Structure formats: C-alpha cells, structure tokens
Amino acid sequence: MKSKSYLPYLMIFLISLTAQIPLTSMRYVVPYLAHIYGASIFIIGLLGTVYGLVYFILASIFGRLSDKFGIKKMASLGMILYVLVVLSYNFYNKPFEFIIGRFFEAVAMAMVWPAVESLSSMLGGKSKEEALLMYTFGWSVGASIAPYISAYLLVYGYIYPLIFSSLISLI
Image (tube, rainbow, N blue to C red; front, side, top):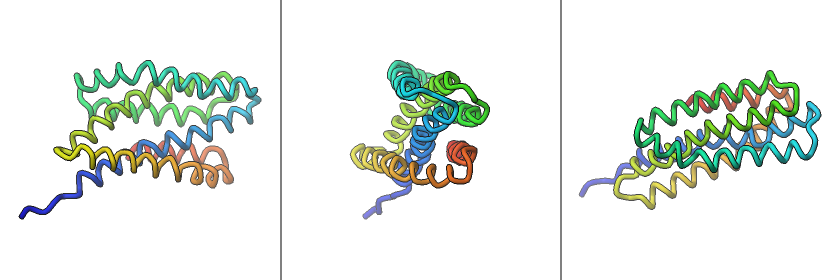
C-alpha cells in the first residue's frame, strides 16, 4: 500500500499563508497611515473601495493571463509588484497617495490570488477537496494572525509592518 504524501498540502498551506499575511497586514496598516497624514473618513473608506473594484475587475483577466504565460511567473511578478507597493507606502505623505497605493496593491493581488488558486489546484492532484481545504486554512490563519503582528510592529514604528509584509511577500 502506498502512503499518502502530505508535502503538496503543506506547500498549498504555506503558499496561501504567505500570500495572505501581507495582504491582511496592509488592510489594517494603510488606513492607519492615511489617517496619520490627515485622511478623512471618506478617503479611508475609499481605500477599501478602490482595492475591491480593481481586484474585482482584474482578477479574472490576470487569471486567464496566468494560464497563458505561466502561473508561477504571474504569481512571482505580482508578489514583486506587491513588495514595491508596500515599500512605497513609506514615502507617502498625502491621503490621496494612499489611494494610488491601494490601486496598485489590488493590481498586484489580482495577479497573485488567481495564480495561487490554480497552483493549489495543481499541487492537490486528484484530491481537489483537500487542496481547497489547505488553501482556505492557509489564508484563514494568515488573516487571523496578521492584524496582531501588524499591531505589535506598529508600536515600534510604521515602517516595521511595511518591512515585515515585504519580507513575507518575498518568501
């Protein structure tokens, strides 16, 4: 009897986790930074709206492009863009700049998440249900721990969550 390999499922979990942690961290840190630089409630709300609309429009487009040009290439390109966007927040000092940042953050994640989903499906092989479970478990854990990590790092300065998110994105 052949034993089951759990390595693909561990990989799915880790890929999903490391993609979600920076995303959730920035979901909390960017409005905080925008507020420090004088963003109104309207601008802070717009940060989420811009992200959501851009992601909604581009995710299916980048999903098809990742099938054409390669899943790993698309995810890697998206994560590199994400690192650049996250680090650029350090240089913003006007509320509208954070809206531009969230726009490009959504572009990057629209490149990453469809590719991560496809990669998870491929790594899962015949067991799509287990692959989906590990994918969901990975992003759920990431979304649960990232706010606490970000809040802790913010105590020491706003640059630390940016560096942390950038480093996780490079993994």
